[in-house]
Image 1 (spheres, rainbow, N blue to C red):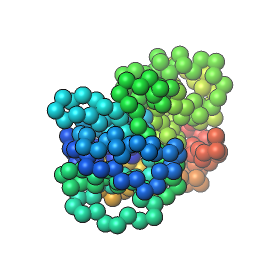
Image 2 (image 1 turned 90 degrees about the vertical axis):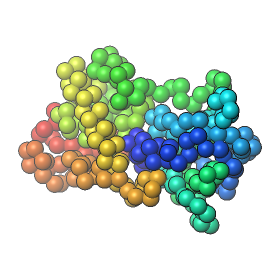
Image 3 (image 1 turned 60 degrees about the horizontal axis):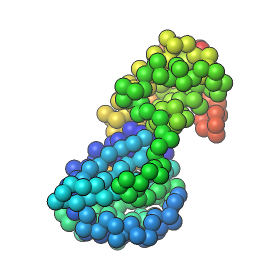
Length: 278
């Protein structure tokens, strides 16, 4: 599943090709994704300009508006879901295949093509000034100053849920997906099974630093290689080569050589070292 680093990598990959470009058409072939693609979206964005390309949590935000005035008309919000990807196609686009659900075509000859075999992704419209924003419930960005040990320690008090589940809750902090949660907890020496409210402030300081380091490294390396994820250029990321616990069940811990264990938390696989993580 594409996580924050994969979405950030995708944003960085597509932005130079679509920024400040005018949309000639939006070609929707399969509107039935996680939420239906609005019928009027093709009309709303036609002949409008891409003013900015942003990321919030695991969502890609493509701001659309007037080239002359720079006034925002609205935002195309895209989520890659479990298996989605965006690919930049230069020149004449090949005929779409089965799971290639929509194209954003630009006047510069670029086509931005969305592929999603499982159809858990999304493409919705947020009009400028609309207060009903589906992003309102989200917590702070993990690489921002707002995410720090004081904040997360205060947030965790009296919480009985496991720390791994707690840091994966998008209301507490966004974008710490399954892989990166396991890796960050290992780096900070915290057991994924420990109750969030029982983790000390000192450990939260280590954990917030670890989350930032792991995500920054993953972004620099192009995301995590998963069978469903490819970058905007069609090439996979490389962070999987650096994983210390995730996917290494039964293999020796790189620190103490104790076999890595695997458990299930919230229907997700968790990997950890029972000796290094307390």
